Image (cartoon, rainbow, N blue to C red; front, side, top):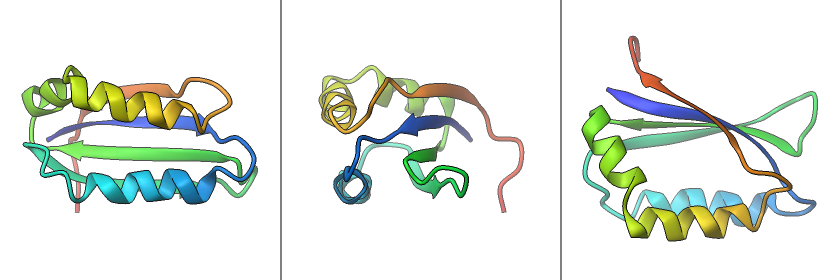
Length: 95
């Protein structure tokens, strides 16, 4: 499995909309998509960590490079104060 973890800072009052966007991912039937988990940080509730899981690096890359994902990303950017900080990598353990 493969995925990414992103740190993002939300604009004020953007959380309901970004959670709605995250929920939409579940309905898109993106090939290889396994799931998404988002964390609101205790230290600052406008900071989120998002972890996304794909079946493989190839499936992750195909989605990341698709025009559809680019459009979704641009919609998400409208809700953020700055661009997310991304960390991609192989998932070595998942329960």
